[in-house]
Image 1 (spheres, rainbow, N blue to C red):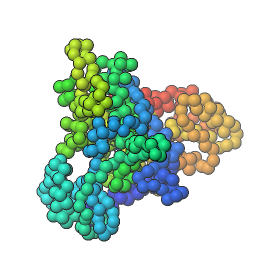
Image 2 (image 1 turned 135 degrees about the horizontal axis):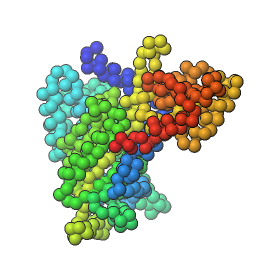
Image 3 (image 1 turned 90 degrees about the horizontal axis):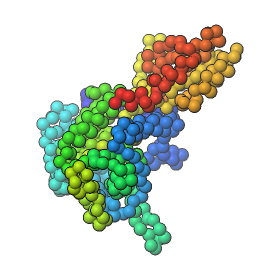
Length: 490
Ligand code: GAP
């Protein structure tokens, strides 16, 4: 096996183990699994949804609670169809696709080419890889599909399945899902939103006026988005139904460089507050820009399958507001009381995929180690404030009043913290079960508790144990597991 194949094999192995873990321990299931699932669509299990909601809560509070000038909305998934004409999605939200005539499989051309370039680098041909990527970017920017055809042929890029390069001509493919609304003979075609941002743009004046916002100000939103992704791979990285957390920050024209930098720094700090090491993050400035952007940078995380985008920060100018003004024939301008004039604000957008963040945290926290005495140990090293369950409460044994004491402790804490109470099997097995779902603390009521009201508290990562008084458990959990403790790091 070549070093490249070995590296690929290792990363596939880690991804496979992670997917199996996420499914076996109640984080993520294939959607409608009893019918063999649906490609690129997933359901969240009890621990997955808890992790996702905690992340959502942290993002929402870090935007709206820590910034006086950012407020939230929740717009509908279905919007007036002209929205998507104005936003450019009907004409421009396409990916270049190609079909392999032998395997009948369809691919996104840019991904095929990027993969080939990665192989060239691994074969010690970085200059060739760079030429290929530069040529591809040139063709994508110019909308030159014939140029992409030629690149596939020139570099003999083959289908991973059939291993041939018998390709159809490259074609553009729109990624929006459409649906019919109304009686059949009088139906209107609507689209499921491919980004949440447009719900913010069309509500710009509603929010500015009703919440009495002054520029600069932001509008945040969390919600579902839908894209008919053709390449279904890498688990929840690329889904057809997913959730975005977006914030549009409305600013004076000519201040976009300052705010673009501000939001890059702000978002970088957010990732480090989650304990993501700097070397696992990469800022990737875009050369090929979306139709609405004049500058864009991706925040990438080192997934088992390489550095990939989790968040995009875009300088969107006044493109969207101006375009909606034109299509809706309504003014979407702001009167600046300081400058004493009307203008169309510019926008800096931060846009992160919630499902990708969940996958990032699972990848980052999935630890499989050899323990000196216990053999292989697997645990999920999730940041405690995001962990689905904050603590598990155990009686050492069920008898001698220990179960009652443990249940009483559970009852006093349950209003503030998501907990698990367990009394079955050995303490070791109970610890293992909590490690697998990332519970940061296990609290055991034992015989000493009956004497001095102390309990043991066992910490997930170091497996260290110490005793604390029962009356201190709540404050210990509050300090270490609340979203507030994460917000305080920002
Ligand atoms: N409003 C700008 C926008 O939608 P984007 O770069 O297309 O920009 C933003 O998407 C984020 O949404 C991405 O960084 C990613 O985290 C997430 N995202 C996009 N497509 C996705 C998909 N098919 N599955 C999961 N997440 C996706």
